[in-house]
Length: 477
Image (cartoon, rainbow, N blue to C red):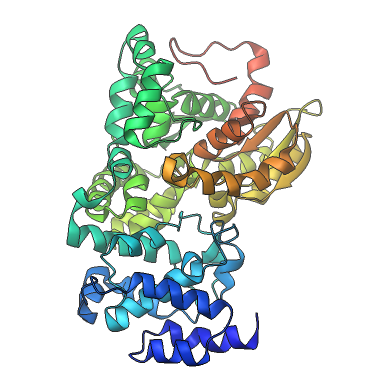
């Protein structure tokens, strides 16, 4: 960065009244671009917001935004920043915080404008920035807090149509999963899906998380807990409960080998999609219901098993943060990710196999890295003698459901193409994220198969034994 760009970035960022004079008099290069962008954001139609309004709406996270020292470390790991749009300062991770600081200090640019929100929405919640921020700012949470402020002021109806569809994801897949097979297949025909994608704002080439059939609750009701096994509670979340119950079935069978059985307590969606959208009141509602139920399991001494990194993060990090209650902290302490559990059992010899004939590439997803699971997954596979060709750390560009939306698809593909090039013609990719697995399959034209780590282990260890799963639910092979 030139000395001009570095020197000019500070006064621009602070929202000082003489911003334009300083910009015109002293800025060059990158700063000129920033000046033009900011002029676009601050126009004659933009109302001036009282500086304390956004502070009140964002609460404590306004102070977190103001702690940003503008070092730019977050830019070096942000997937959307490291693309063709990253030359524009406002479309970078640091730029988003700078804009928030300006709005918090002076009311400009208008934080309730559509342009402002579109820039903030370039944060896909990957959490990579959290690990490199020297100030320790929970940047994705700050962005979510801004979205909560936006909704708090303008209402859920102000969200775009695709975002409103995402807000109803749980109800949509719950209804489909409970339909008769023939009716579900009739609804999910190619013409129907094409029409749905067009109307809802999803990209034509995106693979949607569609129910495979059956509801996990029914499976657990049919199969009683096995005597002699230690019982852990299972938090399924919406994906394993309604979209792919086979995720939970394979996890349960695998843990049975280690002397563990899973119990499904009453529960609701984790709220991860609402969290990403900024619908904090809905997240709090779900968190209270889940914590109340899961706490009853925790006080029995039962671990709470999650098979999704998003679920693990919500229960461990988000619930204690937004509820700030002792019960939520006790639940968080009882949570164990499936990969942590399997890693321990493999090293204890409670899960064992010689998988020297198996080969894979490991994709370390963003949340896997955030939760410190990458080395555990790789070590588990190598201990069982799996031939791990390489471990890839690149973001796939899914960002949950963000990358499936038509308005984000081009950028999502640009992010993911770096990973696809490195995958080459890999046969099996072990990737710990349901939506990342869909993204990999989509971007490779389905030539690459992607599985969750425990699903891969299930297929290698147990499927050759021809073990029959419950009716209507077959772990994906």
